Image (cartoon, rainbow, N blue to C red; front, side, top):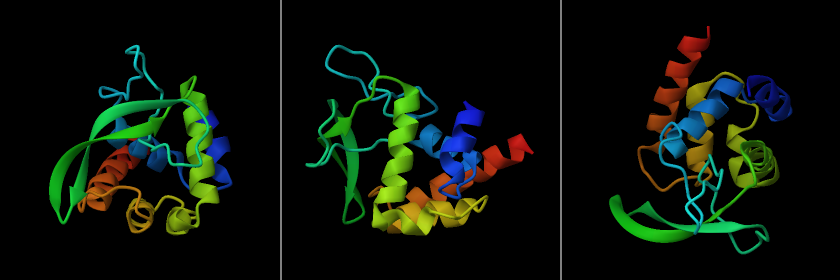
Length: 145
């Protein structure tokens, strides 16, 4: 999958290890996939919600959101994909097309800048999200060197 990541994220200026870390954080290293109604994986590796403009398949699942710093259990609709490659393609488009995530684009190998760019853009409501993602990405970068 790394060659695919390199090609997909080179235009976004984001190192593949940072994208891998983001997928690992959002999916619990693949152990907590978002499942569709039939129990199969939705292949949504990045926890991308299905907003009003999304016209593809969806999966409804429980999630934790932070409101005023407190964790609240809720339910949300998430995008569903036919396979992991489609999830990576859509994730790249979300980052490139949504101006909220401009701060994450072009961060290269800088795990902290990437994580902070996503957090500032509102990717997640967890107040510790940037710290968690940067820590995981830095760990993965150390493994790949």
